[in-house]
Amino acid sequence: MNVDIGNALDGDLGLTRGDLDALDERVADAHDRIERGRAEAEHGYAALNLPETCDPDAVRRAADGFDPDHLLTVGIGGSALGAATLTDALGSGVDCRYLDNVDPAWVRAILDDVDLSGTVVNVVSRSGTTAETLSNFLVVREAMESAGVDWTDRTVVTTGEAGNLRSMADRHDLPALKVPEGVPGRFSALSTVGLFAAEIAGVDLDALLAGAADEAERLAGSLFESPAYAYGATTYALAERGAATNAVMPYAESLERFAEWFAQLWAESLGKDGRGQTPARALGATDQHSQLQLYRAGPADKLITLVRPREADDVDIPETDLEGLSYLGGSSLGELLDAEFRATEASLAAAGRENVRIEIDRVDARGLGELLYAMEAACVLYGELAGVSTFTQPAVEWGKNAARGLLGGGEFPEADAVTEKRRLEVE
Ligand SMILES: O=P(O)(O)OC[C@H]1O[C@H](O)[C@H](O)[C@@H](O)[C@@H]1O
Image (cartoon, protein in one colour):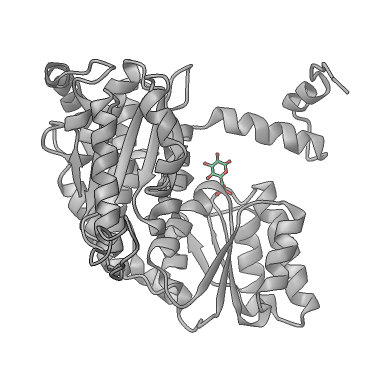
């Protein structure tokens, strides 16, 4: 993976090469802290050890014997987005669906759409207590029973050492994968959490982890020696100068979910103590025709992260005698996409709008391993530099408690806030 931060310098927000040189001392200290955390397998930092500690054979054993038409992953947040990123980008043959919402009509439509007798269900919850996931699982289980399908033959559980889901797996003797200790959900794509779906969808797990291991090797005490840290340090430095938004814009349809995964990683990890950077999701070239207007000419409070594979399959554009279109004929969709990418990058830079280019060789298992690992390491570095508690999510827990209180799941003072809602209704 390659990161080009040239267009992040000398734009409207005024970040200079000298600023990055000065920041590099702090990067060295942060790197030491990260390495200590990894050596002690501390909570959160342990995620950066996954390329070594993850056992792909355990995942293969859990998947062994299944040859489904559909995979239904029941999970939310980090228990869905990593797997979805991998199967969307790399999966083939198996229809992978993610029940990561409890919109009743949508859940019903998915259950009506898949043949449950040809479906494997992977219920994923680190905590084993997430209301949306457990409720959806109960609905899926009942749907299978109603369809005459033995759900115990077709369910794989991914969860922590103990809890509701672990007990259920034990009781019904279900294949169960363990979520590794010390790995928060949003950092778990390269663990059992993301890898079961990837294995079912035919992804090369060894290549994926090898790509991640390559990026781990490249972590170093200088931002100029590590692509992951170059990205983490630059995003931090720009945020400090007013880049409140980080718009992530992959130039590959298959990476659209990556932007969604990145959004959780960045928002939940760094949005603390009045700080953070709002992740926005865009897609090249499509969003050149919508959001780009704002990115180039709106407030100078954004970084645009452009992501692309250097190589991809191509489709020729047929020759045409249509007036004004002859310049396209004989070219290819890939050439057009490349021109759009470079034109967008240049147009942002010409307007003083900071942007960073991230490239992987191809959208393949190795490239995804590099990309996901590097973004996680970048996020951890940013968190160190900003002095926030990267691996917690108290604001999310607050909302979970309020919802649980409302549903009668216990005494949660957060639920009182719901009755105190301010109203100013206009009819
Ligand atoms: O895996 P689970 O315990 O079900 O958690 C799923 C999600 O729930 C919470 O809302 C956390 O904020 C997320 O970080 C997590 O990924």
